[in-house]
Length: 323
Ligand code: SF4
Ligand code: MG
Image (cartoon, rainbow, N blue to C red; front, side):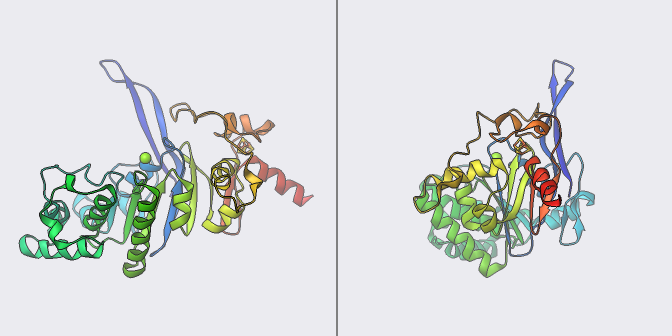
């Protein structure tokens, strides 16, 4: 709720603070049990910072994180560690945090030992069951990370994350490095596991096509803020925010069966740096629809049913409809 994370920019020997990176600038969202919330946006939009805040791997500058009725921002380290079992993450490179000399058994059982859930033979038995559950073999336990393809490695990452029986799995660009056909296999595995285990996912990717495949609801993030949020089908059928439209246009032009209605809406240039976000609407320097209020007035969120959008075009639409 109202999550903010600013990183100071320091300079010189005395580490003088000369500015700040607005990595996350006031985002609010909720994820229900067994539900998938997709978070989409370009690199640098703050998605991974949101992931790290949710898991309390980073302290927020302000705002709160509630998990199953407990406010995580207020917990002592021991209590937090206990709750963290229920929150796990998988990354783009599942072995990034592992020593390449570790066996798969060591990789997968590490969280069991870290959380004192089980050790030795019992931990190995759990790891073998989980490897089979994600489509690998118990005999893979004695192999090494380099012996696996990208898709298999991600299955191992999922098995490792499941050892602590999480309720929320944060997937940060978890399939982004994989080939399209392998992506689909891993996404299908995630869906199956969700059905069986009632897992909730915070699914983060820069590719809207991947996010729409798995998400119940989607949040579109731009320079540290949410610009649009709503049920996945509705948001993709009728994107409201010009930035969402530009993301949707990229998919529409690749799909001959979709109407070309958003085809011409393209964001101009590259995203500005989050250390100097533009005034007014942060998207205005790139927005093909920008008009007078956009450069200096911050758009407030308008809500229509389950959807919200932050864009002055919607203020105007509301004013017109009230006339
Ligand atoms: Fe474009 Fe203005 Fe809407 Fe921002 S507020 S997305 S600049 S039209
Ligand atoms: Mg990232």
